[in-house]
Amino acid sequence: MNPRNELDTPMFRLAVAQFDQAAELMGLDRNLRERLKLPDRSLIVSVPIRMDSGTVKVFTGYRVQHDSARGPSKGGIRYHPDVNLGEVAALAMWMTWKCALAGLPYGGAKGGVRVAPEQLSSAELQRLTRRYASEIFPMIGPDQDVPAPDVGTDAQVMAWIMDTYSQQVGYAVPGVVTGKPLSIGGSLGREEATGRGVVYVTLEAMRHLNLTIDQATVVVQGFGNVGSHTARIMHEAGAKVIAVSDKTGGLYRAGGLDIPMLLSRYQAEKQPLRDTKLGEWMTNEELLALPCTVLVPAALSEQITMDNAARIRCRILAEGANGPTTLDADPILTDQGVFIIPDILANSGGVIVSYFEWVQDAQRFFWKATDIQDRLHEIITTAFQRTIEFSTRRRTSMRMAALMNGIDHVAQAHLSRGLYP
Image (cartoon, rainbow, N blue to C red; front, side, top):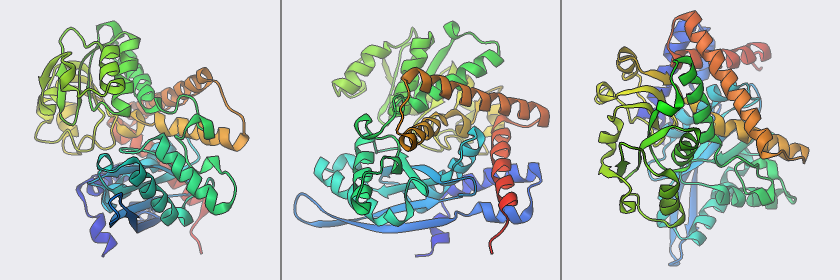
């Protein structure tokens, strides 16, 4: 297996193309450019587990650390059938810029297992998680690399990783992961953090554009952790959420969806989105093309491309997902007057509150929910204002401003530390 060939995926090419464009605009040192294009470390592991049937099945797992110049690396673990090295490396790179843009003392990392978690029993999922955690054990630790939940994983998966790591070292290490249950050192506000951060920066963008929340219509693609919390908090803030979707399709109601009822049926009662019958059914492609004030792509990457960008009819595009917009779609959206809040800014709420959790675990002192929300609001809105100021001053897009700002922080760390040996 040639790791460089495995890196050559559409998502990794997108991450590198964004980096190259930003590096060119900022005149980044050529030596640093070459260094920052590739991750520090990439680990590919076999994850054999015994299935409930008694047979042994082998899955492939990954952990990539892109950069650690500013501190321990940080990034989620996803369980999805499409996980590959290129995807994980791209996500790790974006995490580096995201942490730097928010001013967090972290580098970027990411991990994952190529698996459809919904097809595993709870016992199989636990065995998979514990074996994967034992395989990446040499790479992780509270001062080395700190995993968190991502697509297909949750607080329970983090608890299993924390326990597996703790068993290896002989004592409880809550700080080895974030996004874990409160009972073992998790933080208040972590589960909703990414969605809440999306809302905070969207409200800042609306103020910048002189738009009012009570007149705003919102469309959310993806109704998992990020999308559902974004929809709920936007609804509570006074916006009209007119459409939401999951991978099967979307619900639309021009007068606004009953979000509390939808959440109750979809999450608590486990009704399929379509069966809730709370709106008109449509495809995800149709949903993306709905006229609205705010569009939040909170599903997977590369949802808005050169092929459908001209059909996007929102005023603000708040990227809840990682890499939902391809580079060639950006100028089309800009020409249409779409204000883009790039992913490394819009969805940084998760890693910001993960940082709070890590700090609380280290201190053995835990904060109130209001303290966490206030600190999140301060950090993410300050990052937004810094990005908008940079964008205006340098006459560049919000995406390039966010990337250039983040990359510059990382570059300065490398220049200060020098090259070893």
